[in-house]
Each structure stands twice: as C-alpha cells, then as structure tokens.
Image 1 (cartoon, rainbow, N blue to C red):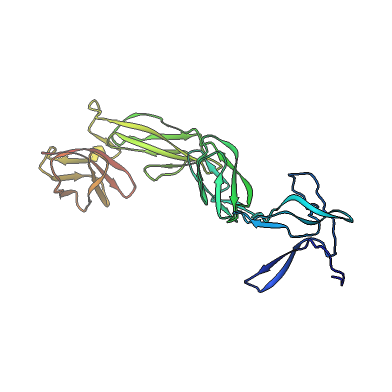
Image 2 (tube, rainbow, N blue to C red):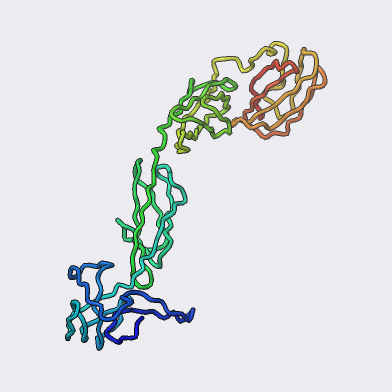
Amino acid sequence: TGATPDFLNDLWRYDVTNNQWKWVRGATTIAPPGNYGSIGVNSPLNMPGGRGGAATWKDNSNNLWLFGGNGYNIPNNVGRLNDLWKFDNCINPTISISASSPTLCVGKTVTLTATGANSYTWAGSQFIGLTFTISPPQAGTMTYTAYGADIYDCKDTAAISITAFSVPSLTATATNTVICAFETTTLSGAGAVTYTWSNTQTGQTISVSPLAPTFYTVVGSDANGCENFAVTSVSVSACTGIDTQAGILSDLISIYPNPGNGDFTIKTDVSGQKTIVIFNAVGQKVFEQALETDHSLIRTGLPRGVYYYKVQNTSLQSSTGKLMIE
C-alpha cells in the first residue's frame, strides 16, 4: 500500500466467474514477520512472514502449501527460510438433519435426511448416503449423528434426537365365549385410549350376536398414537336342548313345512305390518320379505342348508327360529 518495495505475505484469490479479486489473508504492510504459534496446530493468528522465491503447491483437498524462500521469520531479520506451511482452504459446510417425524412408535420407521454437503456418513452404521431410515428397537430418546463432507473433503457434523414410544399392551375379552344363535355377548378391550373392532364398531365395549363361531380383532391406539391389536373369539352352540323358536311373538307365529324345499307358509296372529328376515349360518342376510297377510307364502330360492329367521313387527317385537331347506 506504500511506495517502498519489500517482501510481502498477502494472499489473493481470483474468482473467474465474477471476474474479481478477493484478499484472503496476510498483512497490508511490507516486511511482515512470521507468527508461528504451535507447530501442527491451526490458528487464525498464524502467518508466514513476508518472503519471495518460496515453493508452493495445492493438494487434492484444495489446501495451499508453502515452503521456504527468502524473507522474514522475525522482525528485521531477513534470511533464507525452510519453514513449511499449510493454508487450510476448507470452509466447512454447514449440514443439518431433518426427520420425517420427530417421534415414532416402536416397530415403525422414520427417515432422516441430511443436507448441506456432498457426501454423508452416519455414525454407528455402515450406511453412506443422503437419507437414513431408522427403526428404534426400544422406547426412549436416541441421538443420530451424520458427518458431511464437501467436494474438497471439508467436513461438518450434525445430530438429531428422535423419541420412540412403546406400543400399548392390549387385551380383548368376551363376557361369554360360547352363546346360542341370536344371543348377545359383550366384547371389551383394555390397555388403550381408542378402540376399533374388526366388525367396524368402535368403543372399549361393544355387543355382538354372531350366528357362527367368529374371531374379533380390536386395534387400540394410545395417547401417543401408537397402536397394537388383540383377538378374542365367540363360539356359537347349536343349543339343541332349547326350543328352536323363541321371542315375544313365538306363540303367535308358525312356519311350515319346516324342514321344507325353500317355499314356506307363515301363519301369524300378529296385527299390523310384519317382516321376515333370513340369515345364513355365518350371519349374512340372504332373504327379506314383508308379510302382508295372516297367511303369507314366501319363496326363498335358497339352496339346501340350515338358516335362521327373525319375524319382526313395527313395534320391534320379534320371533326367531331355525329353518331347514332340504
């Protein structure tokens, strides 16, 4: 910056893209002495003294090396030098990690994504790449670390904490595990906050009336949204020791012939509109017809087998029983 020539130690970088010079390091005055610090230890205070005739080169990591020359090691002392310097050109990348979810349930997965560098290595694993899928084996908060490097192998590190929640311990029970057809039993779930059953009913307790042995699955969710499932079953007995016809209207309704070929006559002393509904052995509705008179002929068109019927009036009074088609 002055008119007097002498040894210099300023370092400049020319940006080809912007067609501009950038002053990188060094003094703005002539004959600066060196500042050696501790050998092998990086420091922003370290600086080679002003010199000329030094040897320089750049390594594969874009670091600039300087050796020897003629110049200053201390103030006002000019001579031949043999000091070796490395200018660390790394401007460390700043990497960060994001997660598809900061929490998850044990048994589920979450994807971690690192950004800000060109290559990544995840601590504690052999995985190398931008994203890392994890599935914590147990509940708790775990920290995952990624190391990132740019094209010059300059490095940075980042960490993220992920919390895993335990799944609820779920149970399912039935008040009566063996019932007769058309009887009702109560199913109950425990261990969760919300419950959804395989027959689409919801709630901690539900009522069911299967006509055949049935397995019921309940999916329970806790306060953290973690889910588990449990299974219970209800068996349906033939109940041959009881009447095949039951209900409030059983004394007022008769169906014949039973067994029959699929065509039946229904005689009823019940006034008002009535409906007969027929179910197959697994509880599916397979036939329904309104009964318009006291003597109604129904043609079911059903194949051979055992069926169950319900005759019901508008007051929801009913008679139930078994039909056999031969």
